Length: 82
Image (cartoon, rainbow, N blue to C red):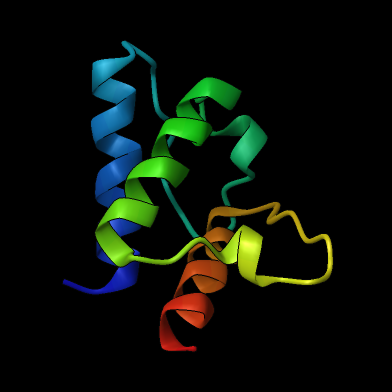
């Protein structure tokens, strides 16, 4: 599975578990408009760290917060490749 596939699957799984209505997940989907709240995003990030073995937020020296789903996926892809 690719990083993008894993990330999208986690978004869908957490939305189901938290009974949230998820918008269509395109690369340009703004995370704040995805239908998920901050708790959902925190769950996703914790699970991605478990699955991918990397936390890009702790690896980066600069403060960077992805805005879109595409940014979020690329952030994890870059960290996994490092």
